[in-house]
Structures are given as structure tokens and as C-alpha cells.
Length: 219
Image (tube, rainbow, N blue to C red; front, side):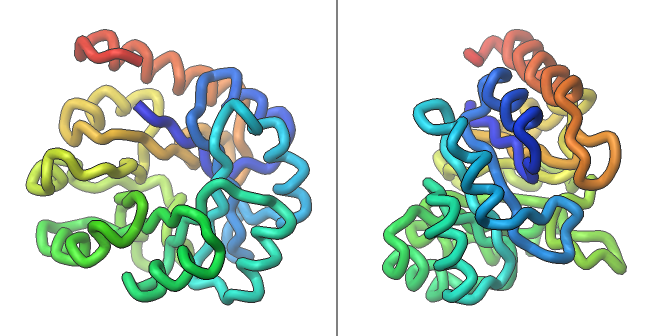
């Protein structure tokens, strides 16, 4: 199962993610986020992941100019778009930058699944997050979850990452209820908004291994 640690900003937390066995590490380029990072700084941090994990650049309705700066400075393996991007925009970005694109979608009720189908076969991967609470300016990273059982209505072979309020204490429930191909965690390994803690990252990986063992699946 893929595990993405997102919103990284320091060498110590990147190392903790890689040492724990992360398949993906994520860097967020969104000024309103406490996890926002400069593209050039992300480029320095992502070097440690080469040959170990895929580096993901997370943006929200970013312009081509800003995305170009990110791609040049960071050299991501994947672009993740977490705004109001349409399937047409996803196609455009794939063609322009020659990179896989992961599209994040917000879920809170069964009818939110209707917006999934247009992206199937267009986005290289999907990510399902909880809808932000009222008043939040962040599309993700709010530390809230949704009813994961809703996702059982999707095609069984749909490749997606599950996100939203996941941490060491509830990862077992998340895996039992949604059966995702991957997990994305950000606020669940923080001691304050935007402040990752290496110990919490290690605890999260330990909890994942325990949950996988109990379910009979392989880590």
C-alpha cells in the first residue's frame, strides 16, 4: 500500500518519512497553507527522495507560470491538483508538463461521488479528502475526516489515495472501511498546524504496519 506524507518542510521530517517507508512525499505550494513551502527549498529537500520515494508537488488552481517555476525548481515526479481543476485542465497540465497528475476531490456525502467519474481515465490517480469545514481557506489538511464507507460504492479497482483526518489512532478503521490503494497523511503527524514531528511520523508507520498485519494484508 502506498503511503504519502504530505506538507513536509524540513530535512528531519523528510528523513522520517523516507525511513518509515513512504512511497510518496508531498510539498505544498499554497500561500494560505501553514505547510506552504518555496519551490526552491522544496527542490533541495526532495533530493533525498530520489530512488526512494516519489516527490509530489501539491497546488491549488495554480497558474501555468507558477507550475512552471515549481517544475523547474523542484523537479517533481507527480503534480497533485487540489482546487477546482476540471478534467480538461488535468489533460492540459499533463500535456504541458509531461508529468502524471493526481486530482484531489472533496467528499462528504454520497452525491459527491458523482464528480469522480469524469476524472476516471483522465487523472493518473485520484485522492479523496474530506470537504473543508465552514470558514476554512484550505481545501485539505484540515484534520477532518468523512464517512469512508461511502467509497465502497466506487469501482473496486479504482486507484486512489485516502486522505482527511487520518492518524495513527484511526488508520485501522480507515483501511477496514475504505480499502484504499494508498493513504495520504498530513495534519495527523503534526504537533501544530504545519509542524510535522518525526516521532509522530514513526508512530504512524508503526500503526499502519499493525493494521495491515491484523487485516492479513502485506505492508
